Image (cartoon, rainbow, N blue to C red):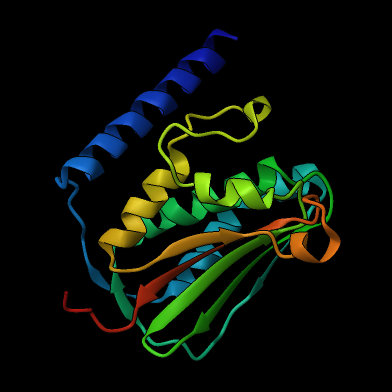
Length: 188
């Protein structure tokens, strides 16, 4: 129990420090040419034991024709791990799927689950600092806001949706989180 509490406090402190560093604009990014599909495969391998423990299908649907792009590999791994970890927290049966695809000048990554879903009115609250929609699962309430800051520092976008909520009127049909990374650096 003591070790669990120390680990929880360590995660909280690290999240707050990451958030403050990002907020102040002092986070350093190591922008190098990378293959996003390789990063996705790495995250899947890292998280497979959790999928097996919960008896969930954890699959990838990757566009094999994506160009290599510049991004900070470690920071994008952090984003993906956070999104996948959240999917596992809220999914008790079914599956989690990570997809990649190409848009006009961006690569889009999506993490889709068949979990408890998100109420439509809560989607806008997801990326706010220290916000948790369901207290029972724990966490700092900073993970998604950190993801947002990392993706935006890459000149990308991040958002969430509830794929089936509008059709069925419920919010137990899963969720999907998307983010994009530019293929060519955008000048702003």
